[in-house]
Image (cartoon, rainbow over all chains, first blue to last red; front, side, top):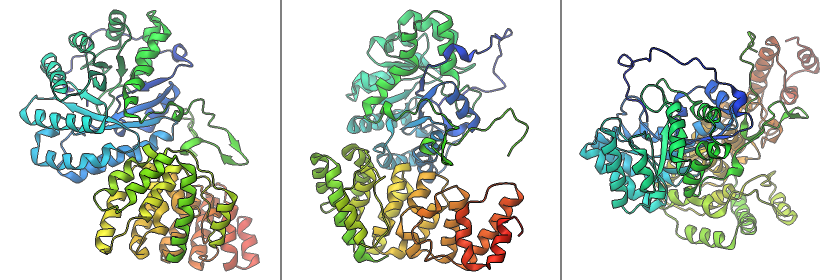
Length: 327
Length: 239
């Protein structure tokens, strides 16, 4: 879940950088976006992500921009994350994982939250579910805390990593509280990915042994120039970058763009690989559900054998979007 | 679907599974299936691949011989260990109360991830009360997920044995529409019918008008229902 930004209130910087994203900078590199809400994105996004080298991603459960009114829509949402969306992604050669959880905003509807909690065990043991998430605080209400705690217990019981959404407002305190409560519930810091960090929160998160994820999201979260500085200052250990692209104005290319910017700024390829690929895999593979051999690399989409497409996993041949002809 | 065939097949399947997963996984599967009930089944079904793995299974020639002897044109060679084990797990689930049985299986369908859907539709010919699954099967045919459609279409005896004509025709048409290997559909010859031929001719005409290829298998299903002259005319684009 990302943005609580209000489009009218957003202040656009007076001077916008117009530097062009040069794909050659990241040629041959591969990326893992550990937080992106593909349900809200188009097939054009999938194609662009695949072209930029994104080989796998994690889609956390979140809210849909407006509150759901019944348990059926939660059930259908979770089942689409492991069903239809996983298939859509596979058509572009991108391995799709997800985390399952009750998001903090909707935890505030307690009668519904109770029904969702009953439903969660049905989904968390499924193939490709790599964690409980994204859970945590939004308004930091008592109801949010109650369901955060219950889901931490569920994570402990199932041995799954936890993906924590940290609040937009009162962020520093909310982040500290999230970590304190996780420890209180007996979770090891290495099983917890604290998301949406910034310059104010990163030090404590790393010092306490948690994973620190950074969301590169225009206007409301991190910019990637700031991300470059953070990586220089703290090094690549236990740091990961994601896009959290969703239904708001966001950028599913945030991870490859950040990698390119890091390269331009002299960060080593080894460190770039850690923060844009390897660390996320290490953290979420603790679920036992990630196998790198499942990532499809080097797809020749035109390859056909005796008239039969040999595209793997139901991939579709790409269409030439620059052509005026649609056949 | 002859239930007697299914139970015979189940024995062969358990033999294949045993040889394709670890001893620990086999023991786990045995424990899980002993007295499996409505509440435990969804968790077992969900986390099963963690135990069995997902390797492609090997069927020995002896086992294939037994399958062939059951007079069913079936193959399990391209299946994965988790898919076959899930099918077998569900064959071990018994429930006298038909409604309860229905609800339990339907519940698995309604929350299924992609590979679970494949396994569930593969299980249709083995489920008790075959007529209960006609709607479910028709629903699966509406799926747009390729591997789910293939689980229903390829070497699966359930549709041919149970679907009423409109649903059967819809499945065959969808197979053409989604570029599936139509020759792998079980019972294609037995269930050929004039209404299907009419729909397919219509579809061929539309493809022709749009300047798209026509799958040659389409004519195979049409030829019994038209004259040779008509067939040749259509093949040359005169509808």
